[in-house]
Amino acid sequence: MRSGLGVKLAILMAAIGILASGLTGYYAYSKNRIMLVDAAQRNLLTSTQLLNRRMSSALNEFAADALFMANLPAAAKSATGDAGAKTRLYYVFNALLAAHPEYLQLRLISARQHGLELVRVDRDQQGLVRVQGQRLQEKGTFPYVFETLPLATGQIYLSRISINHEYGAHAAEGQPTLVIATPVVGPSGTCAVVVINVELASLLKMLQADLPNHFQLYLANNWGDFLIHPDPSQTFGFDRGRRILMQDSFPATQALFNHSSPSLVINGLEDPVQARDQVVAFVRKPYGQPEQKQFVVLGLAQPLRDVLTGANSLGKSIVRIVLAFSIISIALSMLFSRALTQPLNMLAHAATRFSSERALEALPLDRTDEIGILARCFDRMRSQIKSHMATQYETQQKLAYLAHHDQLTGLPNRMLFFQRLELAIGNARLRNEHLAVLFVDLDHFKEINDQLGHVMGDQVLQMVAQRLQNMVRASDTVARLGGDEFILLMEGIPEPSALNAIIDKLATSLNAVMALEQQSVRIGASIGISLFPQDGDTPEALIHHADQAMYQRKSQGRHMACFDQPG
Image 1 (cartoon, rainbow, N blue to C red):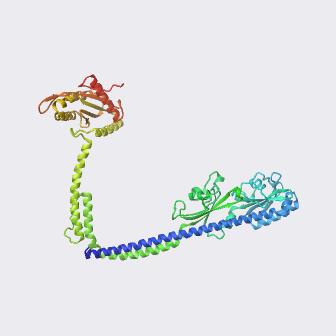
Image 2 (cartoon, helix red, strand yellow; image 1 turned 180 degrees about the horizontal axis):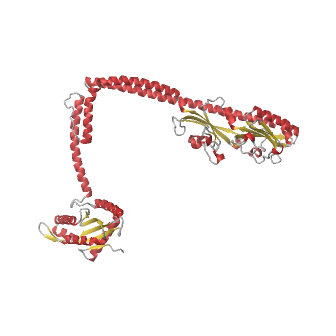
Image 3 (cartoon, helix red, strand yellow; image 1 turned 90 degrees about the vertical axis):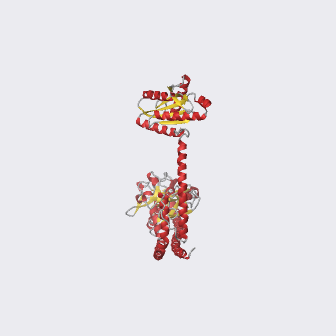
């Protein structure tokens, strides 16, 4: 390689080095984004697990309050109808409700009298309300009563989280609620049930006390129904006759519901379909009695843009650095681009003109460097290509003609005839016109071949082809199927009766004497005719009927035409 071109290529390589630095910066930016997302996933999963532990702690605290009230002597005495015990228990309930804003109701429900409420304190908009007398209700048909009564002392019933639709529940009515219950055991066995109604919103507010404000919370039951969602319209769909499942919004969480995994994380960087613009962590949380097999799925989401704030700052710095290097590379390339690109552009322009227009542009053939060598090689190559392409084009034209025409007569062959017939059928169908297919078979052609030889037979076929073409219109098609068989396509026939004159002319022309080199011969033909649409609406059907009509003609006597007669 000559030194002049080497210097130019060295400068070009310097520009490539600048490009490489840009790619390195982009890789660093991309890697930084991935690292930030990975760290956010770990932190978010830790936060979700912490939220899970807080929920467990809160549920244990609620259970402890229920057990505390169930073990009060006043609870068992209240079940026997002791009015003083009911009053004392009311004050305990009142104090617990005042201390726990998340409690909406505290009740002592009898194991008898169809689950009659014995002591009940509700929360409403004004404060705490004691429900007594005729306002006390029978709750024996509710799961938190009949499923709690069989439990042993110290066991806790946890309900599924649902909307409270109990009439007269004050502030609890219409709210997402978790019910906690435990049996009260007296001298004669289980005599009552202590029930706590916990407001889900207050519980979650307590659990999220230390979480950042931009974190979003998801909660689903063990079927996948959303109980908490950033969009309130997506929650408790089953209560409105429309189920909205976590597995549909986040298909990856299916692993949590079928117990394949206790936790998972997804992010919008790797999975923009499921976690669009978010980083989300999910954890499965069992609760309640083991035999109930109840669990919830907790999820925390963080906006992806917050996670990538640091990467965006780094990306801006990288962009500034790459821009600075780009300016330097542009300044350097301008000094040497003219000497390098002018001959290359000449070659490129010549190649473009040659590929698109087959034009032979001037080339720098007199140069002594690598450009000159390339130009001379290209000049020889394009000359050879042009010669080869001309030969190939001529060959392709011949092959294309031979593929669709008979070599002896020059008429269309069977393939081209089928194509034209299929097109003609479509046109005739659209225009509601007739068309005719004429199958022509020469009579006594074998005798001519046997007596006069194949050379004379070929001359006869050529003369027949010429006579057929002379007798039809330019829009009609005459084709040779092979041997002494010819077929005609005649379009735009107004009425089938119009064919009679045409057939007479064809028969007369074919019966006329043919003057060959050494002698004259007379040859006739049998013609079979089929019509569209009477005899068929496909090329195969029309040719078949014309062929059958031709054989009927031969069986009746040659030198005539015949339409196909059914059966």
